[in-house]
Image (cartoon, rainbow, N blue to C red; front, side, top):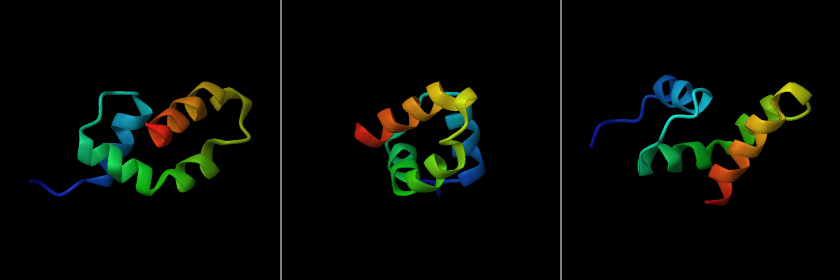
Length: 57
């Protein structure tokens, strides 16, 4: 299995592309960082909901 490249995962998350199981686990492990960055910005409300969906899946 190839190593997760965080830049590639970030681009996929930002583009709301389908994530592999390993990528989803990576995002879940770093979800607090993602949420801290995007929460509070009313323009990112839908994106935060998307991140929470990943977290809760």
